Length: 545
Image (cartoon, rainbow, N blue to C red):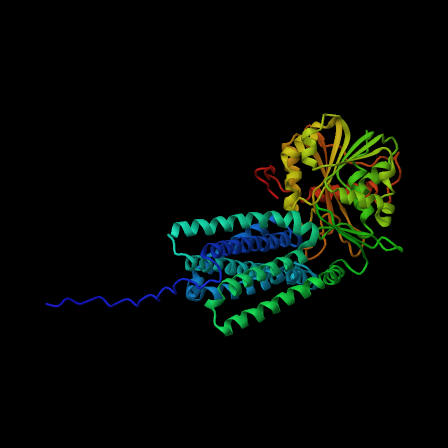
């Protein structure tokens, strides 16, 4: 009896055999690993550039980093699987992948910024399109980076066949060290010295040169004449596109900045902490101050915001005042309008912003040249870190003039631990005032700040102030991602103990330009009507915003 036989499997394609190298195998192996190193560094720069751009332009850095990184890692796995089909043409496939990766990764920052600038930002009707573009770039770069590894493994094995474990160890060692170098180069070299646009374009140029040199130099005998010329011409074309884009990057950035911030942009600097842009402030135009794309000071309602922040808190003892944030000097201007102020300490993270507040004609005129006043003392430090080391000096007033709590980087400055430290430096009858975001647009965030203050041992009085400017580009709450500006600012006036401090204006002080006691009482009543009870406090390990 003849037993049936299983159908024969198709034979695997034969191994192409050792590569015909122009150098010794040891040298060739070193050159491949050097290329792995360079490609890994470039890949991580692309990844960090997408995370940084998403964080700057969209906000909520934790969410944006999670989206970009998870999509890229997923795509790298898919790219590795797809690259199995190219193993028998590893040299040509690797060269093509590096050319495409250099073009996509190098131009990604410019493309994202162009969409941000000329489609009205990341909010409103355009919200989904730019976010989809971010995901598309993450997916494309991840696919291409993932496809590199199997092809590079094949090229290493073609130089000298060895056990799989040893080859993987060599490849991953070069890959991880390259990723380390790229990860350190981005924040310490590329971003501060070249900026995101030119830095990404330069990375793409390095990528295409490294990939092209390896394939056309070391593995040129594995390629047909047509493949060599095709890779060379396409690679040179991509290199030319990246070089032209780099040459036009400054002009492009100016045009995009005008599209984002308007035609009155006078100053745009990267301070090392954030991007600071000043628009207007001369010839009677109102000054707008943008920090990382968010309007920190803007419109004709600037004084209304700062009077609402400072005046209720300084009704009572105010000889010693601490301002956390407020490097623009505008909160200090309002404090110094009150008689009896002996010392104002400003703790600001960004020394570049303070420098502009001292020297820029528009901003220094707006803040009344407060930094020339001998009563004002500036410390460059993170507010939370400074409070941890600060002695219990007994400030009469602490003013938290900080970015909106909805911004991820600011959540620690609205935590129970932060307010506990602020309570240590307050006098027994001192007051703390907190800007807590717009009440109408984000009541849950506002009342979470109130719950956090209560958990820290403060009683608080809520109030809000409406804007009067028809355009009303609200202060610290206006972000590049918002489809429109919020219509109010929310504040909490707090005092140690469980009793809420009285909310009033001192009739003996200078008359406010924009606030009246009747308006303040009405605004406090309007804020209380939005109350949301039962919210948990926000902490460093469990942020609630």
